[in-house]
Amino acid sequence: MAKYLIEGGSRLHGEIRVKGAKNLALKIIPAALLSTETITITNLPDIEDVRQTLAILADLGASIERDGETCRIRIEKIKKSHLAEQAHKLRASIVFTGPLLARTGEAYFPHPGGCVIGAGTRPIDLFLEGFRTLGIEVNEESGLYHLKADKVRGGEYFFTTISVTGTETLMMTAVLASGRTTLKNCAVEPEIKALADYLNSQGAKIKGAGTPTIEIDGVEKISGGKFEIIPDRIETGTFAIMAAATGSELTISGCNPSHIEILLCIFKKIGVKFERGDDWLKIFAGGKVRPYNIKTHEYPGFPTDLQSPFTVLATQADGISIIHETIYDRRLLFTDMLAQMGADIIMCDPHRVVVNGPTKLAGKRLTSPDLRAGIAMIIAGLIAEGTTEIDNIYQIDRGYEKIDERLRAIGAKIQRVDG
Image (tube, rainbow, N blue to C red; front, side, top):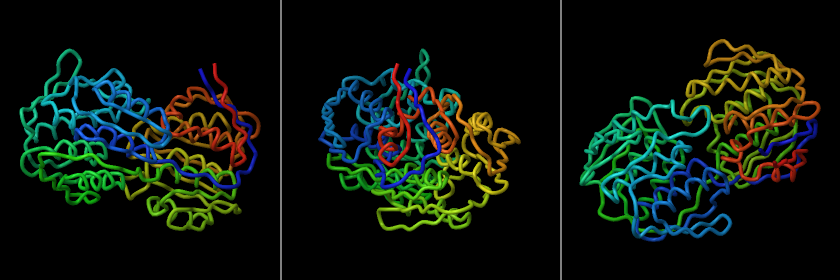
């Protein structure tokens, strides 16, 4: 299997461009099912999760043409109602179910999977409850979920737990429903508003996306069109933390700093100096980083997807930081690998760790358990003395396009070794 080899100790320099948002790309591709016309997607990242998502769509009968960061999709006739095997490996595959049901009247799908924090144990009860609210019959047959409805009808659903993917899935399910659908306690991430803005430009009637309450008046038809994926805010924050952790001066271009306002606010408190523009962010090399306690929260709070990189930064801070993970039960387990590298970390319980810094890290052989822990391992390797070897880099490839090439271009000593 492929792995990364990292020689630590080098400062980063220059400019790195942010790619299109992974968490939006995985939703706009299934949205193509809502129309029989062509959708042209630009700024599409070349990552494993996107390739898997396109494969699921192709299996349903889509015509797909891809040229670099541009992809054209047309699906005039859907040839089946079963999602392909890839759906079992990809958490976001559940987003296909609503549009597929709206077009064909039914959908079969396995329990969605993903990495160690997203695999089969994560419940999908919010999705199933929401589907039933819209008049959809839900059954389990031979290890598959079966959704069926002659016509999806409008309804009202309150999310007892805020869910980004749940909000997007039910929003798209309701676009072609009869009547009005009201979704309450919705997630408010920028990706949700971007998705709704596109659908509205193609004939949908969605109000309130980006707020806790969304109203959707069903329409008969959605047209095709052109959609540019917004910059990946998690990449933006990751590169900013990477620069701060390595004491580097780095310019991050093609980003939207307003989408990581919480991180920039924390940077001011801990002594990380930066400048920002509308589509760029520059991190300056500085002195000591002060400790800071974080608690992950839904947007606009501190993103769970930045918790792992920030935990690495905390190992270099001058004092004690408490990291409280509230979203995913197993996301802090990777800190054991930081401890193997020399970090002073105490796990209080599955949701909290105490990080005492600063500590010198030493290169070790590590295994990436999930996407965000994987990029955190890369940051740790860039800080560490000696060589760090990271296995299972498939998890990193899922969300970061050619990360080794991009990091080498800004001075990192990282190599991909295949086989």
